[in-house]
Image (cartoon, rainbow, N blue to C red; front, side, top):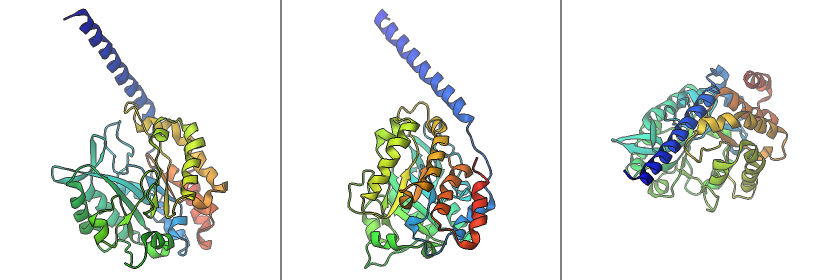
Length: 343
């Protein structure tokens, strides 16, 4: 072997070794932030304490980014609880990406696979049957291959048929969703569909979302995402620059539901989401709590985060007290539910 080739191999080996060591160190550090706290029973029915006439777009709800990734490799996992556990923690919005693998629809993130879609839908169905005061929002907006979409449609009808929020034909979905109250949707699932396709056109329970940049003048859900911000900003810079920018973008949008993307992403695919969240968690908790005294509070609707746990969700849920939409007779119980997990 020539000397130049040996040197190249040695350099590549050192580089790969450094990457592996960095990933192991980051995973070790991040592993210390695992939050396995058990939720209180009240978190399963927190919406029961919100006034019926509150517009859905005014209710503050915890959301889960890449919700079905529990059990994936470190570079893809953004949640370490399954959907049933996330629901029990108070999560009511789920970001789902589906890919077909060996005839089964599974959640994917990058090259990795995790939970089966049918199990997720079973969890949602069983939860709503047990907690009829609650509403769940499923945002199914990415499909990894051609077979995933038609099979997803079949599974949605099979497991959640009859439980979807449905729209009259003569009303625009933006107007319809904008007028929905929490009382209108209790015990139901609101299905957000990522593509304006034949399924969205045929079903009265498919509601469209806007694109990541809000460039399309359609859709009843806004979920803005600028890759460079989420991938490369530090926690402090993200909170200072990206969070206000996303909120302002919503103010200038066509309206509807609003998902505030509060998570950071590992743009290098080395250190992993858990480490990024470990550096961001306490800062973002403080940022969310501070929204209670912000002039932007009225805009806050769904706060989407990585590695859902009772503490993060309660930071979000506290904002409903600040919005004064908790039922008068439930204020003390609601506050106690939230304060139990706030440090």
